[in-house]
Length: 321
Image (tube, rainbow, N blue to C red; front, side, top):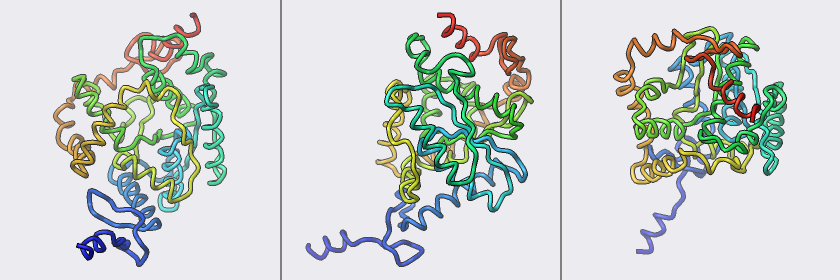
């Protein structure tokens, strides 16, 4: 009995060196030390970028840097990828004006420190200054639309607009595997076939005013990203957004985590299976044509399927009230 216990408690060695393993990839059983885990994760992201042709030689990539672990990890990974693929990184921080816990201020400072460390100039957009309202202003109005949904709308609008102004070829975001899986699950629950058909790790440009978006981390687990920034000693905002408790995807993410604990690799299998097998069935020529037939907002000139875009309607509600 004692011998069994000793064998069970014995530490594993890294698969690629003589160091003790700092972690084990649960769905593959691969034990890795800190150094080789970092290399392993970076290689997986590089492979994803190449597989989906997310970034091409000579492109200008606008990278949304929020200060959170996902965007900070992506910032450093893309900087390393520059050694292999010659492209330009344009880091951009959106100051949403969240005053509680000095959240926006601290996030911006951390984003700037990481960019300076990598020799990159961070562009900051303060939405209060540029558009006349902050996320705090939106929350105070208690609109019917969930605050996290509004936040996503603002970020997409600003990233797209700035990408056009800065002549960026693509916009890169730090959405991870857990994010992707929760989006899929949420839209299944809502039976939103239109949104399901549009979910993709790379969204090409159908319109010159709608810049393509890429998600290089979409096959990387959230806890793997946490380990990556920890093992590399990267600074990131480690306090939750004050509005995060309002997120409708939180419960779905918890369900997915429970599923993963029962069946390691389930989330990755689900996301890969969706994109490879199910999404092609949901897509059709008509939906693609709808994307191509976007009009422009009569107030700001950005792409929209209606006379006035969602961002301008939101802005009008907040400022008028």
